[in-house]
Image (tube, rainbow, N blue to C red; front, side, top):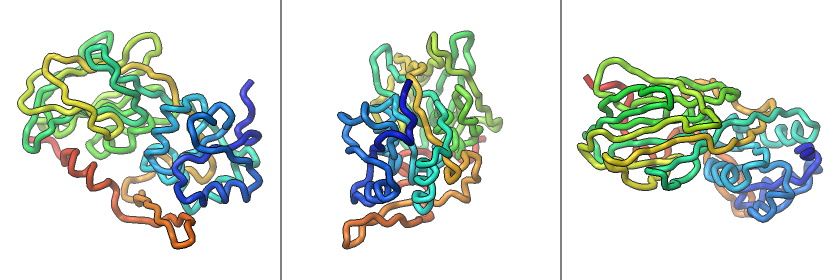
Amino acid sequence: MSPEPRNGPVAVVGDDGGAVVELVESMGLRTVSGEPTDHEEATVAIAIGEPALFEVAREWPTTPILPVDVSAGHQAVPPGALQSALGHLADGTYTIQNQPLLSVTLDGDPVGTAVSDVMLVTAEPAHISEYTVERPAESISTFRADGVVVATPAGSAGYARQVGGPILSPDVAALSVVPIGAFKTERDHWVVSVPEETWALNLSVEREEAPVSLLVDGHDTRRVAADEQLTLAHGGVISLMSVPESESVYRPLGDRPHTTRTVDDRGSTDFASSPETQSSEESARLPDASFPRE
Protein backbone atom coordinates (compact mmCIF):
# COMPACT_ATOMS: atom_id res chain seq x y z
CA MET A 1 0.00 0.00 0.00
CA SER A 2 1.31 3.47 -0.84
CA PRO A 3 2.12 5.69 2.16
CA GLU A 4 -0.23 8.50 3.11
CA PRO A 5 0.89 11.65 1.26
CA ARG A 6 1.09 13.61 4.51
CA ASN A 7 3.44 11.02 6.04
CA GLY A 8 6.13 11.13 3.38
CA PRO A 9 8.55 13.67 1.95
CA VAL A 10 7.32 16.47 -0.27
CA ALA A 11 8.96 17.36 -3.59
CA VAL A 12 8.66 20.98 -4.71
CA VAL A 13 8.93 21.64 -8.46
CA GLY A 14 9.06 25.10 -10.05
CA ASP A 15 10.22 26.90 -6.90
CA ASP A 16 13.16 28.77 -8.41
CA GLY A 17 13.78 30.98 -5.40
CA GLY A 18 13.45 28.24 -2.77
CA ALA A 19 10.83 30.15 -0.77
CA VAL A 20 8.22 27.39 -1.00
CA VAL A 21 10.70 24.76 0.22
CA GLU A 22 11.39 26.96 3.24
CA LEU A 23 7.67 27.36 3.87
CA VAL A 24 7.02 23.61 3.57
CA GLU A 25 9.82 22.80 6.00
CA SER A 26 8.60 25.47 8.43
CA MET A 27 5.31 23.56 8.59
CA GLY A 28 7.13 20.47 9.84
CA LEU A 29 7.06 18.62 6.50
CA ARG A 30 10.16 16.96 5.11
CA THR A 31 11.23 17.82 1.55
CA VAL A 32 13.25 16.15 -1.17
CA SER A 33 14.60 17.72 -4.33
CA GLY A 34 12.33 18.25 -7.31
CA GLU A 35 14.59 16.19 -9.56
CA PRO A 36 13.02 13.25 -11.46
CA THR A 37 15.37 10.84 -9.66
CA ASP A 38 13.58 11.57 -6.38
CA HIS A 39 10.04 10.89 -7.56
CA GLU A 40 9.91 7.37 -6.06
CA GLU A 41 10.67 8.73 -2.60
CA ALA A 42 8.25 11.67 -2.68
CA THR A 43 4.66 11.04 -1.62
CA VAL A 44 3.47 14.50 -2.71
CA ALA A 45 4.71 16.87 -5.42
CA ILE A 46 3.91 20.56 -5.10
CA ALA A 47 3.91 22.00 -8.63
CA ILE A 48 4.38 25.78 -8.78
CA GLY A 49 3.00 27.06 -12.08
CA GLU A 50 1.67 25.33 -15.17
CA PRO A 51 5.04 24.24 -16.67
CA ALA A 52 5.90 22.49 -13.41
CA LEU A 53 2.49 20.81 -13.31
CA PHE A 54 2.94 19.45 -16.83
CA GLU A 55 6.46 18.25 -16.02
CA VAL A 56 5.40 16.42 -12.87
CA ALA A 57 2.32 14.89 -14.53
CA ARG A 58 4.47 13.38 -17.29
CA GLU A 59 7.57 12.45 -15.30
CA TRP A 60 6.00 11.38 -11.98
CA PRO A 61 2.68 9.80 -13.01
CA THR A 62 2.09 7.94 -9.73
CA THR A 63 2.79 10.86 -7.37
CA PRO A 64 -0.15 12.95 -6.10
CA ILE A 65 0.24 16.59 -7.15
CA LEU A 66 -0.81 19.74 -5.32
CA PRO A 67 -0.97 22.48 -8.01
CA VAL A 68 -0.17 26.04 -6.92
CA ASP A 69 -0.43 29.24 -8.98
CA VAL A 70 -1.83 27.38 -12.02
CA SER A 71 -4.47 28.59 -14.50
CA ALA A 72 -8.15 27.63 -14.55
CA GLY A 73 -9.29 24.05 -14.30
CA HIS A 74 -6.58 22.40 -12.24
CA GLN A 75 -8.08 23.07 -8.78
CA ALA A 76 -4.94 24.99 -7.90
CA VAL A 77 -4.15 26.68 -4.62
CA PRO A 78 -3.84 30.49 -4.96
CA PRO A 79 -0.35 31.65 -4.01
CA GLY A 80 -1.55 33.63 -1.01
CA ALA A 81 -3.31 30.58 0.46
CA LEU A 82 -0.35 28.20 0.30
CA GLN A 83 0.54 28.31 3.99
CA SER A 84 -3.01 27.45 5.00
CA ALA A 85 -3.12 24.71 2.34
CA LEU A 86 0.08 23.16 3.73
CA GLY A 87 -1.56 23.04 7.14
CA HIS A 88 -4.41 21.00 5.66
CA LEU A 89 -1.91 18.76 3.86
CA ALA A 90 -0.13 18.12 7.16
CA ASP A 91 -3.33 17.23 9.04
CA GLY A 92 -4.79 15.08 6.24
CA THR A 93 -7.60 17.41 5.15
CA TYR A 94 -7.39 16.72 1.43
CA THR A 95 -8.82 14.56 -1.32
CA ILE A 96 -7.11 12.99 -4.33
CA GLN A 97 -8.86 12.81 -7.70
CA ASN A 98 -7.53 10.81 -10.66
CA GLN A 99 -8.05 12.50 -14.02
CA PRO A 100 -7.19 11.09 -17.46
CA LEU A 101 -4.10 11.95 -19.46
CA LEU A 102 -4.14 11.68 -23.25
CA SER A 103 -1.67 9.71 -25.33
CA VAL A 104 -1.20 11.56 -28.64
CA THR A 105 -0.08 9.79 -31.82
CA LEU A 106 0.07 10.91 -35.45
CA ASP A 107 -0.21 8.09 -37.99
CA GLY A 108 0.89 5.71 -35.24
CA ASP A 109 3.98 7.70 -34.26
CA PRO A 110 4.05 8.97 -30.64
CA VAL A 111 3.82 12.74 -30.26
CA GLY A 112 3.50 13.11 -26.49
CA THR A 113 1.16 13.12 -23.52
CA ALA A 114 -1.44 15.83 -22.94
CA VAL A 115 -2.46 16.94 -19.47
CA SER A 116 -4.90 19.72 -20.44
CA ASP A 117 -5.71 19.76 -24.15
CA VAL A 118 -4.82 18.94 -27.73
CA MET A 119 -5.55 21.31 -30.64
CA LEU A 120 -5.50 21.29 -34.39
CA VAL A 121 -5.47 24.89 -35.57
CA THR A 122 -4.67 26.76 -38.76
CA ALA A 123 -1.21 28.27 -38.57
CA GLU A 124 -2.13 31.38 -40.57
CA PRO A 125 -4.70 34.03 -39.57
CA ALA A 126 -7.92 34.46 -41.56
CA HIS A 127 -7.76 30.89 -42.92
CA ILE A 128 -9.95 27.90 -42.14
CA SER A 129 -9.72 24.18 -42.80
CA GLU A 130 -12.11 21.23 -42.70
CA TYR A 131 -11.87 18.70 -39.88
CA THR A 132 -13.41 15.32 -39.09
CA VAL A 133 -13.80 13.94 -35.56
CA GLU A 134 -14.73 10.32 -34.93
CA ARG A 135 -14.98 7.92 -32.03
CA PRO A 136 -14.70 4.11 -32.24
CA ALA A 137 -18.44 3.58 -32.71
CA GLU A 138 -19.19 6.39 -35.17
CA SER A 139 -18.18 9.59 -36.89
CA ILE A 140 -19.11 12.60 -34.76
CA SER A 141 -18.90 15.44 -37.26
CA THR A 142 -17.12 17.05 -40.20
CA PHE A 143 -16.94 20.84 -40.04
CA ARG A 144 -15.11 23.87 -41.38
CA ALA A 145 -13.37 25.97 -38.73
CA ASP A 146 -10.16 27.63 -37.63
CA GLY A 147 -9.45 24.50 -35.62
CA VAL A 148 -10.66 22.09 -32.97
CA VAL A 149 -9.67 21.62 -29.34
CA VAL A 150 -10.01 18.43 -27.29
CA ALA A 151 -9.78 19.03 -23.54
CA THR A 152 -9.45 16.71 -20.56
CA PRO A 153 -11.37 17.53 -17.36
CA ALA A 154 -8.24 19.34 -16.16
CA GLY A 155 -8.17 21.47 -19.31
CA SER A 156 -11.87 21.95 -19.93
CA ALA A 157 -12.01 25.21 -17.93
CA GLY A 158 -9.19 26.74 -19.99
CA TYR A 159 -9.11 27.61 -23.69
CA ALA A 160 -11.85 25.08 -24.53
CA ARG A 161 -14.20 26.95 -22.22
CA GLN A 162 -13.30 30.28 -23.80
CA VAL A 163 -14.44 29.01 -27.21
CA GLY A 164 -17.77 27.67 -25.95
CA GLY A 165 -17.04 24.26 -24.46
CA PRO A 166 -18.47 22.88 -21.21
CA ILE A 167 -16.60 22.49 -17.94
CA LEU A 168 -16.12 18.81 -17.15
CA SER A 169 -16.41 17.60 -13.59
CA PRO A 170 -13.01 16.46 -12.24
CA ASP A 171 -14.44 13.03 -11.41
CA VAL A 172 -15.59 12.29 -15.00
CA ALA A 173 -13.37 10.31 -17.38
CA ALA A 174 -14.43 12.27 -20.44
CA LEU A 175 -13.25 14.74 -23.08
CA SER A 176 -14.70 18.01 -24.33
CA VAL A 177 -14.49 18.47 -28.12
CA VAL A 178 -15.02 22.04 -29.34
CA PRO A 179 -14.63 23.57 -32.85
CA ILE A 180 -12.67 26.83 -32.86
CA GLY A 181 -14.29 29.58 -34.92
CA ALA A 182 -16.67 27.23 -36.74
CA PHE A 183 -17.90 28.44 -40.15
CA LYS A 184 -21.60 28.33 -39.25
CA THR A 185 -24.03 29.99 -36.89
CA GLU A 186 -24.74 26.91 -34.72
CA ARG A 187 -22.24 26.31 -31.93
CA ASP A 188 -21.73 22.55 -31.64
CA HIS A 189 -19.55 20.82 -29.10
CA TRP A 190 -19.45 17.27 -27.79
CA VAL A 191 -18.53 15.28 -24.69
CA VAL A 192 -17.10 11.78 -25.22
CA SER A 193 -15.83 9.07 -22.89
CA VAL A 194 -12.19 7.99 -22.55
CA PRO A 195 -12.16 4.18 -22.78
CA GLU A 196 -9.11 2.39 -21.43
CA GLU A 197 -9.36 -0.56 -23.82
CA THR A 198 -9.25 1.33 -27.13
CA TRP A 199 -8.66 4.78 -28.60
CA ALA A 200 -10.97 7.64 -27.70
CA LEU A 201 -10.90 9.91 -30.76
CA ASN A 202 -9.50 10.17 -34.27
CA LEU A 203 -9.11 13.62 -35.80
CA SER A 204 -8.13 14.43 -39.37
CA VAL A 205 -7.75 17.42 -41.67
CA GLU A 206 -10.05 16.90 -44.66
CA ARG A 207 -9.18 20.04 -46.62
CA GLU A 208 -5.91 21.82 -45.96
CA GLU A 209 -6.54 25.39 -47.10
CA ALA A 210 -3.68 26.58 -44.87
CA PRO A 211 -0.98 24.83 -42.78
CA VAL A 212 -2.45 23.16 -39.69
CA SER A 213 -0.51 23.00 -36.43
CA LEU A 214 -0.78 20.35 -33.72
CA LEU A 215 -0.59 21.86 -30.22
CA VAL A 216 -0.21 19.67 -27.13
CA ASP A 217 -0.80 21.60 -23.89
CA GLY A 218 -0.21 24.83 -25.81
CA HIS A 219 3.11 23.67 -27.30
CA ASP A 220 3.31 23.73 -31.09
CA THR A 221 4.69 20.26 -31.89
CA ARG A 222 4.41 19.96 -35.69
CA ARG A 223 2.35 20.49 -38.83
CA VAL A 224 -0.42 18.03 -39.75
CA ALA A 225 -1.13 17.21 -43.39
CA ALA A 226 -4.49 16.28 -44.90
CA ASP A 227 -3.51 12.62 -45.26
CA GLU A 228 -2.46 12.15 -41.62
CA GLN A 229 -4.59 10.86 -38.72
CA LEU A 230 -4.34 12.13 -35.17
CA THR A 231 -5.32 9.58 -32.52
CA LEU A 232 -6.06 10.34 -28.87
CA ALA A 233 -6.19 7.51 -26.35
CA HIS A 234 -6.14 6.95 -22.60
CA GLY A 235 -2.59 7.71 -21.47
CA GLY A 236 -2.78 7.03 -17.76
CA VAL A 237 -3.98 9.35 -15.03
CA ILE A 238 -2.84 12.40 -13.12
CA SER A 239 -3.58 12.39 -9.38
CA LEU A 240 -4.54 15.93 -8.34
CA MET A 241 -4.80 16.82 -4.67
CA SER A 242 -7.49 19.19 -3.49
CA VAL A 243 -7.54 21.05 -0.18
CA PRO A 244 -10.13 23.51 1.13
CA GLU A 245 -8.10 26.37 -0.39
CA SER A 246 -8.12 24.86 -3.90
CA GLU A 247 -10.05 26.85 -6.50
CA SER A 248 -13.23 25.34 -7.91
CA VAL A 249 -13.17 24.44 -11.60
CA TYR A 250 -16.55 26.17 -11.87
CA ARG A 251 -15.28 29.57 -10.80
CA PRO A 252 -16.24 32.23 -13.41
CA LEU A 253 -13.49 33.22 -15.81
CA GLY A 254 -13.74 36.87 -14.83
CA ASP A 255 -12.90 35.99 -11.23
CA ARG A 256 -9.65 34.26 -12.13
CA PRO A 257 -6.67 36.62 -12.04
CA HIS A 258 -3.58 35.37 -13.81
CA THR A 259 -0.71 35.06 -11.32
CA THR A 260 2.95 35.70 -11.88
CA ARG A 261 5.93 35.45 -9.57
CA THR A 262 8.64 37.95 -8.83
CA VAL A 263 11.82 37.49 -6.86
CA ASP A 264 12.87 40.18 -4.42
CA ASP A 265 16.43 41.19 -3.56
CA ARG A 266 16.59 38.61 -0.77
CA GLY A 267 16.05 35.78 -3.23
CA SER A 268 12.62 34.89 -1.84
CA THR A 269 9.57 34.51 -4.02
CA ASP A 270 6.64 36.90 -3.82
CA PHE A 271 3.44 36.03 -5.67
CA ALA A 272 1.74 38.97 -7.42
CA SER A 273 -1.52 39.25 -9.33
CA SER A 274 -1.87 40.41 -12.91
CA PRO A 275 -5.09 40.99 -14.87
CA GLU A 276 -3.76 39.02 -17.83
CA THR A 277 -5.37 35.67 -18.49
CA GLN A 278 -3.10 34.41 -21.28
CA SER A 279 0.54 34.84 -22.11
CA SER A 280 1.31 37.06 -25.11
CA GLU A 281 2.83 34.05 -26.88
CA GLU A 282 -0.33 31.96 -26.42
CA SER A 283 -2.62 34.85 -27.39
CA ALA A 284 -0.69 35.39 -30.63
CA ARG A 285 -0.85 31.74 -31.53
CA LEU A 286 -4.51 30.94 -30.87
CA PRO A 287 -7.36 32.42 -32.92
CA ASP A 288 -9.94 34.75 -31.44
CA ALA A 289 -12.96 32.48 -31.70
CA SER A 290 -15.50 34.19 -29.52
CA PHE A 291 -18.19 33.84 -32.16
CA PRO A 292 -18.84 31.43 -35.04
CA ARG A 293 -18.47 32.75 -38.56
CA GLU A 294 -21.64 33.56 -40.49
